[in-house]
Length: 163
Image (cartoon, rainbow, N blue to C red; front, side, top):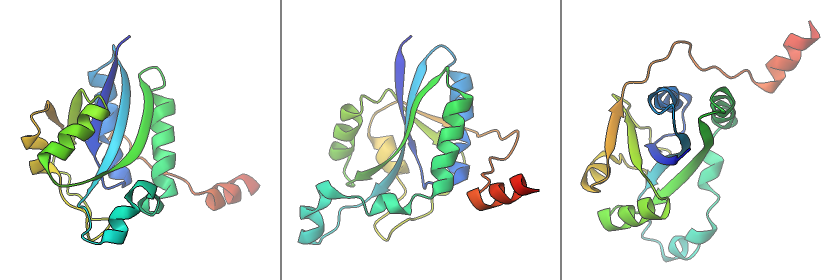
């Protein structure tokens, strides 16, 4: 079974995960590696640029609920999804973005229809134009939510178990 690497622009909200079941149903005969990517412009600060390779500050912006949602989807579609990983893209040029896509061996960019991207930092930006100019195959999918994805936090779950 061939593996398809997919990039999905994301603001790391639970609603940005709603496109994943649609992708799993659309490509039933392929294993999927899904990267949920948030786009950040490079800073003008020399110290930020020097420390860019050691970035972990942005990963603190991703909620535990988002990670739990990724795990739930990976378990629900274990036969089709190999990995769901959050990632950050640093840059704002088509050439840098194409290099990023080649490094990830991207076969497809999937964009949720009518999704407005929240800015996680002042350097965040909407990637739509950058993706369109990349020349890669882009599909826009309407996320169908049969049941809203909800995550029970650990404290609430513990209280439920005590009853």
